[in-house]
Image 1 (cartoon, rainbow, N blue to C red):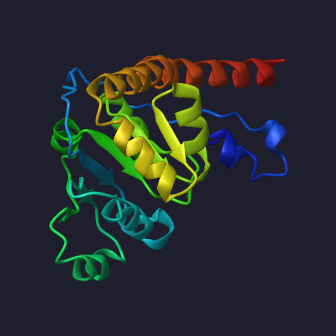
Image 2: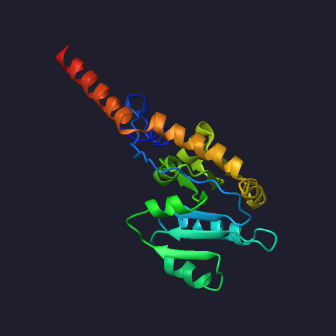
Image 3: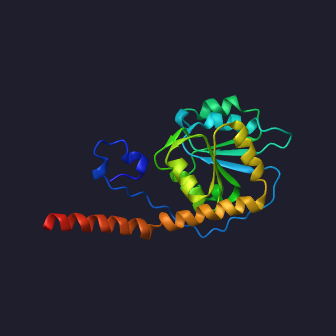
Length: 213
């Protein structure tokens, strides 16, 4: 058993592997979609090279014009101190370090952003979707691409110019609401405890049936 189709592809005996993803906690919080010129963006995850946090920061601070968006970065890792020092003079980039309760950050921000180069199963993106946050991800491979494509919950951007275009689009509260609600619906329909639990029960029942034959 593995938690994503992308992970399954790594194994030569993949036809014998069942895909059962992690469940994602449902939230009753109703996201507020407000028209804004300057968005509050949130990244939650490890601050390490393969997560692409530096290229994410670079894309955001290079946004054209005077009205810069603010990026809130939650998490710890090898690159945290290096990035804090490098961008210490840029007030739109805020580091919080490791935080246990991420709920308040998902509730207070407008868009979840990711610079990760690869994700087998993008847990934090799905958690953000469950809170009704639309997603913008930089060019990536793995589960992130399929989740965003299947859900309609956001955009994958191939370069900085496209990233800037999507940020501009999301200043419109109606567009944010459309993508945010689509992502939330997708998570509730595919990753609830009951749905994932039923997959495990079915797998176990099938295994027991095969052994009794």
